[in-house]
Length: 392
Ligand code: PMP
Picture (cartoon, helix red, strand yellow):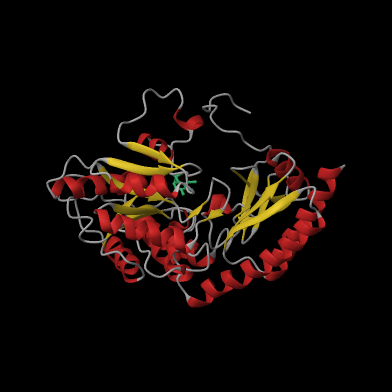
């Protein structure tokens, strides 16, 4: 192992060679059932032939031209995204953090364009994760991610999800620009917000001229069984939304979407990205979108999620000393554990099952959206084996 890589990661002792569907193979040929899927990015499984073909065909034609020129793939994917959502306009970047960063910039520019430059404060929530750039770590406010990186950025307000009075008070302040929230908190431990919570916040934001931003980087693109998680509820659409991860089916893409009104401050020259929306990413993005947005994919996610939920609840009932709660939405599932979640991830790996960590001592299952019924049952079987060894 080299010491030439920056030591910021806590890597599992597993070197992956290749993947196929919901399965990963290590360099020694051992096969793992992958319920991490690149942390919810490989939404159509590994080496999906439709995506491989789209990428290979584009790779033979044109990789990159920069945003000095028109890129037809960007226009095609933007039209798909706006056609399937609240949004009128899209900006493409390369990652979730970059999408969040652009969403926050859009919100502040909106108020600037409206002659209210004093509206700069962004409300964020404990348990959130928005990425690792400066704006993203300040918006989420997780102390262990901001500590040691100098003073916190001004203009970020930290609240808790259940502080109803505090939320109403903060939204009503004349200096508030925006509120950013994940409809299903992912890294925080698969915590799904209710439709009532979202509706209340939506209405308060509308009432006070505050822009509502959803971070659907993890919960979006089919993960919950709707194209976007907030689409489970009526009347809760945001003004701006950040997406990434599954948008490229594992290829790096990010985007923020906005209504034309919310985006009105984002005029020529105020924002940009060299690689964002490049032809390779767009070709894969279009192919991924067309596969994910299909009714049969979304209903498959709903069916597999329902099966997993009932099987996992039964597993929790059989193992109350190990699993205290099953939560999340769709195929963004959290198992809240009694033993340490990092230890449990290693035990699951011993049984050839890969799961992701999460806040509040959860492990998350974020499998391919195409996980089969047999694979779902196999995952539960392996979790049960891990519960057994956790008890030893
Ligand atoms: N927002 C959410 C909700 C996320 O889950 C993540 C990544 N885990 C990000 C933002 C950041 O995305 P990226 O790592 O691509 O910058």
